[in-house]
Image (cartoon, rainbow, N blue to C red; front, side, top):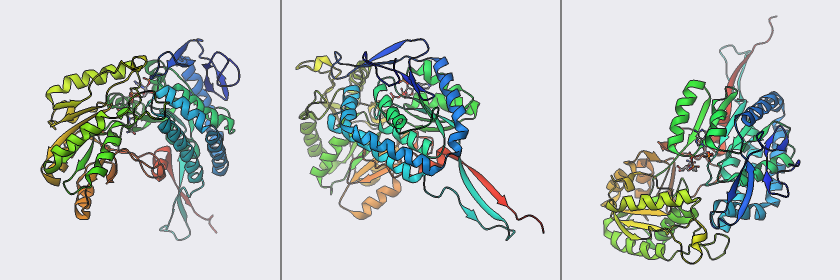
Length: 492
Ligand code: NAP
């Protein structure tokens, strides 16, 4: 292994204490494209507890120096990393598509999003970080400071393999924390590329450490390490529930961003063609594998039959195939397991609604080289059924007919999730009633559930999060703690 991330044999190391190095065991795992399993994306360090311990030790060692580094100096490094990443955007976007399977446009777009996030938090590092208060004693200087937590563990999913790590890492570093980053096993190359940009920008050794490998071999020892003061996790509700219990024992500050069952409500007065475009995009882009994907179209009964017929036509006509090809609209599921699970869930849901299109694994016309699933639509879905309640995390949409906004809101809210939601209407009063009544952290009127800009808070209500928010100014809340300072003049 050389001092770069990649050798001639395409083996990518961990990044610990400023050096790229193999796992202590020398073990590796391979990563293949979900669109074509003959495409070997790379081999990566299959790390274990001792690698995690080295990474946490390096982060702990670097913590005081980084905490004391001027926020302006930290900002300069983030700016430089943004420029480096921007220069590599096309190449990394292509790698993202090979590794994760979303279309090339989405892969390049997501890489651009990571650039934007780094730039935003370079700016945030230079914003005021405390408050000045009046005191009972008029001579007392009374103010607050926001200080870093120390070592933070960042654990990320595969579905936004560069944007989500960036939106955790950029604020963690900007506000003075040191980081141990464990990416999803399905998308380690994007993690290597993001880490490489920050390393090339001049981050001091130990400030950012990347450890690749599995959930039990790397994730588990990392979250249990008593030197870890904060854990920011994005992923499934099942793992989130385990982390809640664990953090209650260790005392680590915990941030969870979890699943969704996001509704798009279409009322009879909506521009139906506009709603159709946004509902299809929200449900199907990135193969429906977005936490904010639309999975329920809650449609006014007066227009439901026509809207469902139009949805069937549009969804049936989507071009599924090689995500690197410009004409492709929908790529593969991320893995064979994901594709099999989606198809099994669809088969199990046949009593929950009427299957109108899709539902199968695609194998003809070259699809057999990867993990392709046909975009799927159910009509007349029972809102209380599994299909109406649970996240399928694939290209699967269910239509639920309702009578007007009040019933739509009641149905939309009767799930354990509350991540994003949208409403299609031309009526301003109705739109405002929806904004007041919907239980979701991200709310859209006349646009798809999956839109999110990087400079505003992001996160869900109810079971979709731990009540914290990521991105925008909200990120400072999680990645810092408050120190309240009273300074009195000396007597006399
Ligand atoms: P996941 O299985 O929960 O995995 C997420 C990350 O946690 C991966 O890096 C995984 O490692 C690691 N991990 C798993 N078990 C762990 C444990 N016991 N201790 C420590 N780390 C552990 O989720 P996923 O399948 O990657 O992602 C899909 C889910 O993420 C969906 O539910 C989706 O809605 C949600 N999501 C939410 C948001 C949001 O912002 N709300 C955004 C995107 C995705 P391995 O990869 O090695 O298994």
